[in-house]
Length: 70
Image (tube, rainbow, N blue to C red; front, side):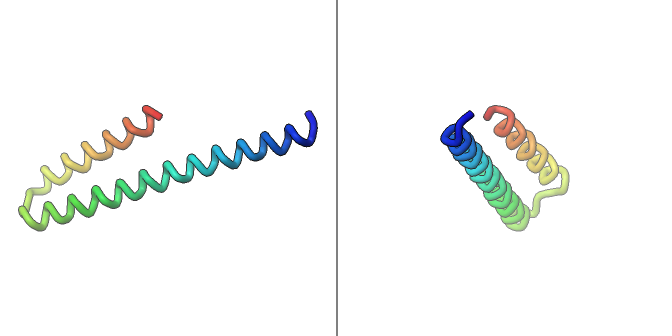
């Protein structure tokens, strides 16, 4: 393996890491947005605890499915 190949491999590795970090940041931002919406909805509608838990469980399920589908 030549030096040029090593640089190409390292560049590809760094690009892959960057894409992964971007994906993680998007997931975290989505989660924070979802949590903020849940808090606002709960405050506005005074929803009971079971509805909030059900919504959070659905959000977690959706996020897991999105990660798995990648």
